Image 1 (tube, protein in one colour):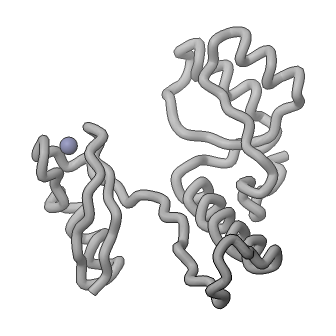
Image 2 (cartoon, rainbow, N blue to C red; image 1 turned 180 degrees about the vertical axis):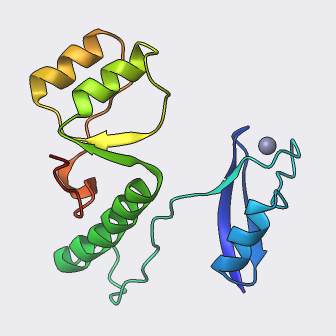
Length: 145
Ligand SMILES: [Zn+2]
């Protein structure tokens, strides 16, 4: 059994048990994972920050190596999540983001590369772009051309 922290499109966060992750995927695909509040099926797994039990009992004493490892675990999960749910548009990011913002193409979650000035120009146009700090950038990114 595996317990997942879930989040509904309505904003409710709740937990549910599944046989395994494939069980969750199967139930979710069939719309069987529903929100206890609104009954909706727009339910997703939350990104989870691992709660790693420290080896030391010393309060307030944190091991920098342990903290770094914990952060790397978290960053790895974020990278995986982004790679799974966002399309890599590489260095076409400014063009694709701008076309979506202008309604010229279908909206979809994307990530890619933009210069600081491109990103600022997009933000000035009101496009919903957010810089992705380096630790969270998927490492399998590839240039598309
Ligand atoms: Zn809901």
